[in-house]
Amino acid sequence: MQELAPSAHQAPIARPLRAAAPSSPLRGTVTVPGDKSISHRALMFGALAVGTTDITGLLEGEDVLRTAAAMRALGATVDNLGQGHWRVAGRGIGGLVEPADVLDMGNSGTAARLLCGLLAGHPIFAVMTGDASLRKRPMKRVTDPLSATGARFTTRAGGRLPLAVEGAADPLSLDYVVPVPSAQVKSACLLAGLCARGVTRVVEAEATRDHTENMLRHFGAVVDVQVEGHGRVIELLGQPELFAAPVVVPGDPSSAAFPAIAALLVPGSEVTIQGVGMNPLRAGIFLTLQEMGADITETNRRIEGGEPVADLVIRASALRGVDVPALRAPSMIDEYPVLSVAAAIASGTTRMRGLKELRVKESDRLAATAAMLVANGARVEVDGDDLIVHGAGGPIEGGGLVETHMDHRIAMSALVMGLASKRGVTADDAAFIETSFPGFASLINGLAGAEPIAAP
View 1 (cartoon, rainbow, N blue to C red):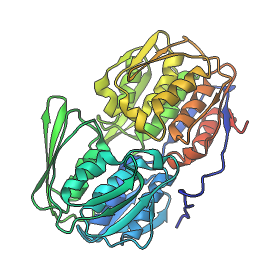
View 2 (tube, rainbow, N blue to C red):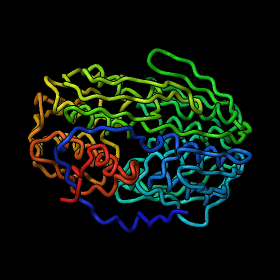
View 3 (cartoon, rainbow, N blue to C red):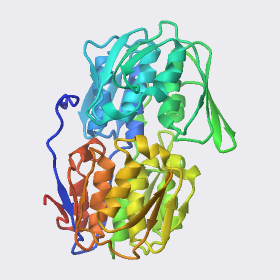
C-alpha cells in the first residue's frame, strides 16, 4: 500500500522546474495516466457494489490514492495489485461504516465533493479535511442540495473544509436543478440518491461530463437521461443493488492535452498518445485544437468500460486564433490553462468564453492563467469571465517565473509554454503535478531524447 502524508498539516517541499525549447522535435508513442474522474468513481462504485471489482489502468496519482484511502476507512477492502491494477471488495448500498479518523482528501476537490454525496446517504458521522489549497475551495455547492436528503453538514465559514457530516438514516430523494454546470455537484446528488427511496432527479442546463451516469449503468443501476436543449435531465431509481463489474480506465484526456499541445508547438514533432478517453462531454479540447488548425488524427477507435477511446496521432502545426464558445466550457474546463499556451503561440486572437468555473478550481485558474502568460510576454485580457489571448504567431518570449499556487495544471501549462519559448519558463513549484500526472517531466523528456525540463 502506498503511504500518504497528512496533507492538511504538512505541505510538500517546493520543487521548481524549468522548461526550455528542446534541441530536437518530440517523437514517440506514449500513454498518459488513467482518467482521474473515472478513477475516483471506479473506487467509489466498487466500494458500493456487492462483490469484487477489478480495476485496470487506475490513475495512481495523489488525488486518487486519497479516494482509495477513504474507501478503506469506510469499510471497503481496497488492494493495489500493481501497475494500475486494483481490486475493491464492496459493502453494498448503505453498507459503509463510520471511519475511525478524519478523512484527508489532500488536494482533490472531486474526491471531496463526491464523497459528500456518498456520505450523505449513510447514517454515519465523518469529518473531512484537505490540504491548504482544498481548504480554500467552496463546498456549499454540494452541501446545500445534499442537506435536503436529511444529512447535516457543519463547515468553516464560507462552506469550506474541514467539514463534518452526519448522514441521513432514511435519506430523502432529491429533485435538484444545478445552478452552474458542474459534474461534481450532479454526481454528488446522484451518489446520495443511491441510498434514497424513490427517484432522484437532477437537471442541468448545460450537459457536463457523464462518467457517473455511465458507471451507474455499468454497475447495474437504472438511470434515465433525457436531453433538453443544451442540457439534460437525469433520473436515478434509488436503492438499487449494485453488482461488481470490471472497469478499464482510459487515458485521461485532460492529461493527454499537455503532451498533445507540446507536440503541436515544437516544430517537427510527431507524437502518438494511446488509449485516450474520447467521451464527447470531455474531449472539447481536441475539437478546439482542430478548429485552430491542429493536425490530430484519431485511430483505433473503440469502446472500453462504456467509454469511447482512441489513439491520437499529433503532428506539429501552425495554429490560428479562434472563438471558443461558452457552451463548450464544461467539456474542457480543466484544459483552458494549457489551451491558453497554444493560443499565445498561435496567429491571431483567441477568445475563451464563460470561464467562471475556473475561479473555484485548485487556484483561481483564470487569474493564475492570465498571470502565467503575462509573466512570459504574452498579451492577455480578462473581460468578465472571458480570457482573451493575442497570439504571437511563433515562440513566446518566456524568461518568467510562474506562480503555480499549488495547482498541478498551472504547473504543467507553464512547462509546456517553456518548450515553445525563446528564453525558457520556470514553474515555482511543480510538486503538485504528482496529484494527476506522475512522471510528466520524464515523459516529455523521453519524447525529446534529452532533458528540456529540469531543475533550474
